[in-house]
Image (cartoon, rainbow, N blue to C red):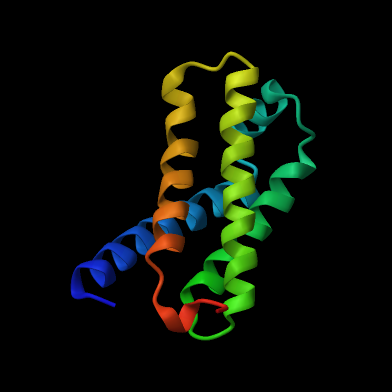
Length: 123
């Protein structure tokens, strides 16, 4: 792995981890704005707990060494959660500025996954 790729990987991964951890904590705390938002999107409030727990566990999986299969599952979970969030925003006619965070985290997920070192890959 080149030095450039390693830098790209760690920048994307740390920003991804920070974004997922912060949104996961906010979802677990059920901040009023998020509760109102999730209801407006048409999801039940308990969905915040599920997403919050999964995001925090995914951050742990992506950052710890070894366990490449668990990392693949975490990346897949991040991809499904963020693409689903972006689609939910589009389907509910949310303003474009509300879709941006989901698309940013989706992009960081793909970049981090693509540039991950060989020891963090299954094959």
